[in-house]
Length: 247
Image 1 (cartoon, helix red, strand yellow):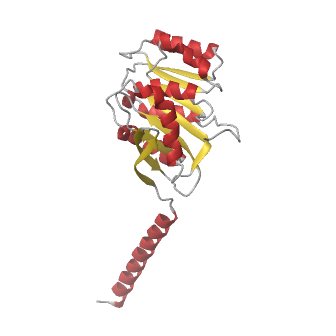
Image 2 (tube, rainbow, N blue to C red; image 1 turned 30 degrees about the horizontal axis):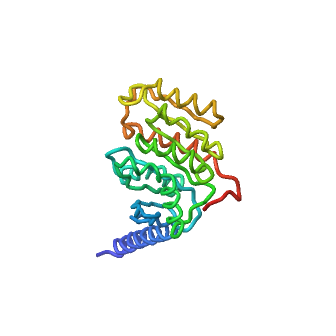
Image 3 (cartoon, rainbow, N blue to C red; image 1 turned 90 degrees about the horizontal axis):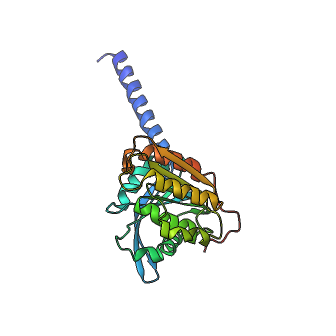
């Protein structure tokens, strides 16, 4: 083998070694993500939830994701994973039971769950948000009213406040900013019923972001990327004032 060929091979090997070293250095510099499953003891309830953080070493905002009836927490985490990594957001998602009695204690359980997560995740207490789809949206309205001093803002897809439940708007100590998303072809909730909720909240003085989605039905996941991006643009503009109670 000629000396020229040997020199070319050595140069090629050196380049490959340098490339491998660069990849290792970049990997070591990138923040390590972390995810898993946890159970929080909330009164008499053992609440199971999933968590995911793109950077466990820094204080980050958190979005509590509430799934619809028959859905699972993992699907919500997956739908939000891309924007969470891009925007550096902690995701928390409880496994919600299909039990009407759960609603009575849901806002307190959500708060308890976030407090549990704070024991091992760096969550900014002024930037904790709620996002709910369908049944999860119903519970998100509860969180907005009964824990208005805890959740900085709330976003809801495909849900309205029922006529016989409108009294909850008077329970909010703080006018929680709320975003509402509804498809014009929703099979379960008419535009008229959701517009009624919009007007209810606006008349009560809640900061509101209202979006009607053309040619969209009740299927959140069909437009989840678009809905999540717009939701986060709204949520991140709001935070609790410094010194607001976190417990």
